[in-house]
Length: 261
Image (tube, rainbow, N blue to C red; front, top):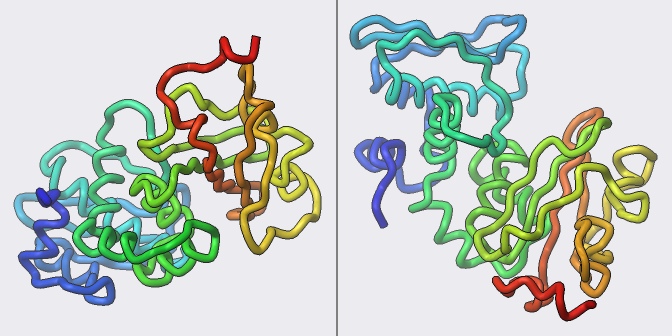
């Protein structure tokens, strides 16, 4: 397996277990000092000159967010040293297009959840659900969202993540085994479990539950399929839904809509 720049840093430092990923030590080795101050309007920033830099992290943020912020700024230090940067770090989520922020996010994900440590644990995992995601988040000391994205993109099971806020879908990502034609609706369907959690007082389920695919996908033939859905609240006005695809017909690359006419 070819190492990414962040993974190469970890291996050069002899990191063999997630508990050994000491971000302040990694920053020091890269010539950057980490300090914690109350920040308004951003989660972190980096100021550097020559081979030295100072990374300032919001002291009021949760520990997992602080770790991501440090890793993200180290991504800028690795890839964009010498460039003028105005950085507003957000929680890890898929970004479209190519940008310096996306590059820094990718570096942070590889630094916090390196594939050479992450994927062996994935291969030992028998199922994907919220409990599994939480166990990975704890093992790698990252946010629930970051662990969920990494697991879905590792393709442990054919799956999709969809994040919603009060005004509709914010972002989504899918595993490689999911054909691109399965594109989630912007608005939550009132029949979905996610709707009751997002807009009501429903509690998350203990395991993924069956749901008609047409509650999530507005396309001909979706009503002939089922997915499994499990939703959690990740913020005051934000939910994250895990969708599992267990019907092999949904995974066929050929569009089968003609069969339903």
